[in-house]
Length: 208
Image (cartoon, rainbow, N blue to C red; front, side, top):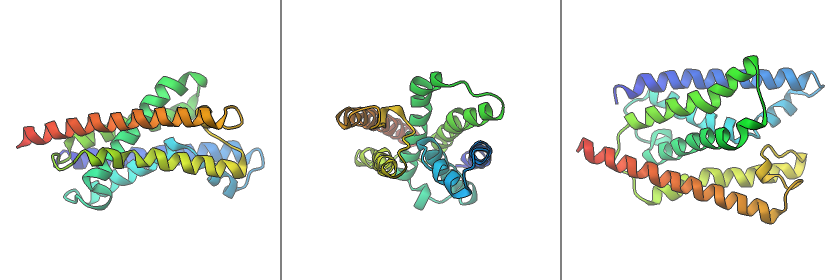
């Protein structure tokens, strides 16, 4: 617990910096094309990566301020959801998406922060937190985050026709293919949550 607090503080600071930097970069790009602040903010909150980074950054910020708390954002099942989600961001991006573009300069810095530094920092924070109270149902609870995002992303896409990820883009794929893609990704997410749950149980037994 004592080591978790400084890690959480560092993670929160780097997380807020990365989120702010990514917003500034998006603002610079879209405002040059005539987009309003509302349009830029709407686009900013379409990305699973940024939503998940915001989620885990808030978890770490609260842990830094209230290190003894195991409720709210720092409830063990919420932290399991958060660590599964941010590691999912890291793995899916580096395996499926990173080869599709080549960011430079500040965009490269933002890219590394949100896809690599924050995930690794949060994983370390999570390992240092108390363990042993989770049940197998908490793994299913953790999978609600990507499911909620899938509904959110597809619904808002009906209004602006912008789909951030190729594997859930109905302008390029059939809804049947998208459903298969999402089932596969959610299944992988659930398996990841189960693996992390097993690690949590092992850490809990070791501490006991």
